[in-house]
Image (cartoon, rainbow, N blue to C red):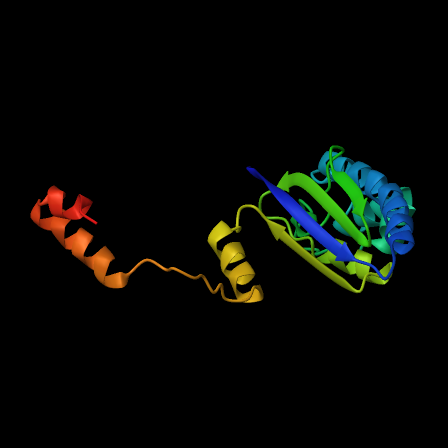
Length: 182
């Protein structure tokens, strides 16, 4: 399976709130990474039912059990696929504070959802949280949203539309000397 880079931005009331949330998130994410590895090890273990394996995971990783929302086990899912994409954090994630913003970046399974990670930060006091994956990222959409946020530019001495049209026409018909004339 492929991987993608995921980005999350959480805005807190103060820089101190963001720092505290980041410190706590580090503890939870360290455990979430171990949870994910353990899940991969036991997901095909048929000696225990799906419910038993789920309970074993939650018991072994109490911070994940308490603070990360995970889907409920499904009896008709012996491979525990219901957890796929919901416990995605690697041991190489980057979590840093910039003012009152907490930023999280990680390369995880390409179809993951960080809705539960966003919810985790909201429950830690974030005012707003947004996440995105580079697999769905369109830089032109980003630029378009930024265009809508800035004022229109009023430039003096704009190029003459008639001059531009004249030069374009000259190039089309092969009269380069007309195109270079002022």
